[in-house]
Length: 246
Image (cartoon, rainbow, N blue to C red; front, side, top):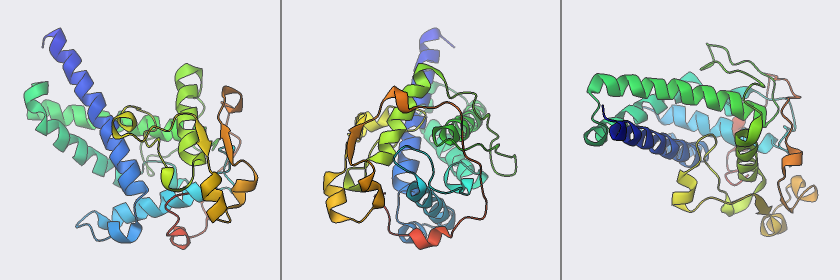
């Protein structure tokens, strides 16, 4: 394969996974569980993913730590969600074969490698971002490496990027990319590194409004070492349906 073709394949691969990360996060994890449940075959899995992720948002304080010790279900890519990602990635890469010039076998291998690599990054970085000390077991999903990737310029950028996703409340939610930025910019949902919840706080009774209503995130807020452990006996995520803008 020529060098130009290799570079094109890498670019297409990055673009595709950035797009899938955006779609899964914005449309599934932040979707309406009742609506997702109607999707054929994978509806129950997507609804459960949304419930767990929305419950996770309710736990996040304005300093990105968790209010209570919580189940990791809303924090990691478990096997069910990972396999959905694999299927979507393979289908997308197959549709781009005329550009990548990869055989079906090579496309399958690349898609599997992407899924494993991506889930490793998410499961490692996302837990660190919320300072949750937890080793993801093989039974839960792709194993992670706690406190290993949470250093350096790239992590600081991603931490601030993701912090705004949590700290900006209401209908102006954005920054849906977590580990592979790019598609937020194309979709107009990049929110920068400042948030303003004035309108949201005027219309709700969210206690977090009293802590921090309007501000910008800074490098000084980032702590590379985790401080929380996981309690698998968390409250039922079903009680949090409807909190789609938290």
